[in-house]
Image 1 (cartoon, one colour):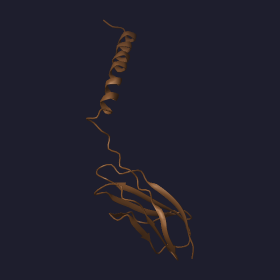
Image 2 (tube, one colour):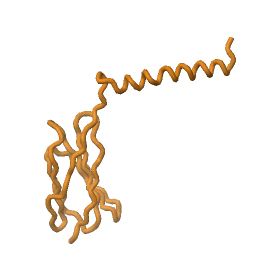
Image 3 (cartoon, one colour):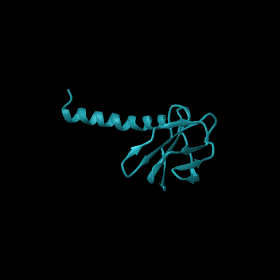
Length: 121
């Protein structure tokens, strides 16, 4: 019969022996973790109430999610999905905006790239 201390030590020993096996399984070539690269947008134009961005294609068949947030009032534009490597946001009121860009390549989207810009009247 084991005491509580002996049982606890056996559980700790089991975990110590199991953790390296689990971590090596997660990083083996047979189980690659798919990481979708984020786009690298840059401002390509700006007009009254509008701003354009462009970026290089990330991978074949990728689509991109884009949207904006006006920081003065946290107003958020709807998330748009596009296969284009450029986009223009129109109808924007003057103010400070954050523009968000992510890549979709399968089940795991990239993290968002955020660009800060001012829109003037």
